[in-house]
Image 1 (cartoon, rainbow, N blue to C red):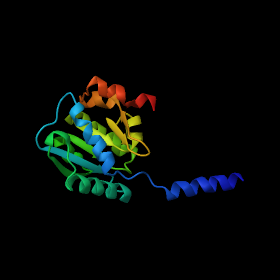
Image 2 (image 1 turned 120 degrees about the vertical axis):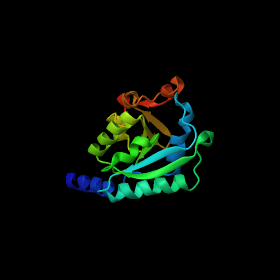
Image 3 (image 1 turned 90 degrees about the vertical axis):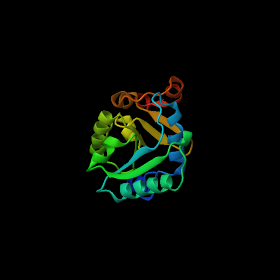
Image 4 (image 1 turned 60 degrees about the vertical axis):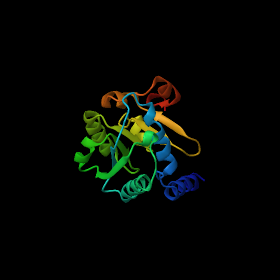
Length: 177
């Protein structure tokens, strides 16, 4: 019986890959922008970061770019200018105001992104909650089965990004996950 249960769990994990980032995830993330204390205005560079050694990560990054470039609107008529950025070359992250971390990023890559984002003051967003729990990403977005926004005060402080106090009260804090 024990072997059966272990095999069944393995089957479930292999058939159900991590949730790919979709339009609802991105829409929820963009709705947080007006709640920043330092408003983002005008054309905004958006880095979409992926792990080049992971095909799932690259595919998720391309999906994110396609959705945004396909006409996804940011509040306040902010024009989003996307660029795919490999986690092995984060030079493009320095100019970005927003960074979406694709699924499939390894812990070391998230840590590297967090370091560059902190020095550049870049808002980092991911559907990978492990990144937020590790305080290496400011926002985590989950849209299924219900919408939830996770917030890392540690990562926000490191990047010098602030949100309205009402926003932080409505999010799930990284320390309480």
